[in-house]
Image (cartoon, rainbow, N blue to C red):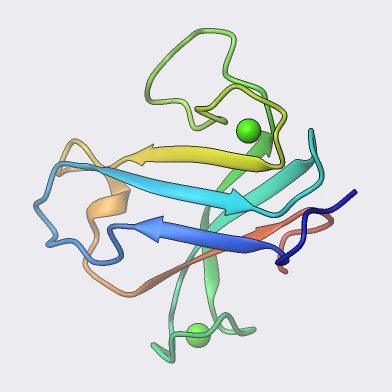
Length: 118
Ligand SMILES: [Ca+2]
Ligand SMILES: [Ca+2]
C-alpha cells in the first residue's frame, strides 16, 4: 500500500560550485515498501529546469528500497537506510574534481518505479 502524500524526490544540496567535494543526498519517498527505483541524472541541455526530450541522461542508478550494496562501499549508490520502508535514502559522491559530475552545467534528477523517465 502506497503511503499518503505521493512520491517525492529530494536533492540536497541543489547547487554546487564546480570544484566542491561533497556528497549529494538524493531521497525518494512515498514508494511501495521494497520497490525498485531507477534514479537518473540528466544534463538539462535547454536549461529550462524541466526534463524534456532534448535532455540527456548522464548517470543511471538502479536502486531497491532496503538494499545496500554487497561490498559495503560508501561510493556505490544504494539505499543507505537499509530498510524496506517505502523510502530510499541515497547519496552520490561528488568527490574528485576531475570526475564527470563536476562538469559545469544544469542537471536534473528523475526517479521512476517503472521506466527511465517519470
Ligand atoms: Ca530541459
Ligand atoms: Ca529504505
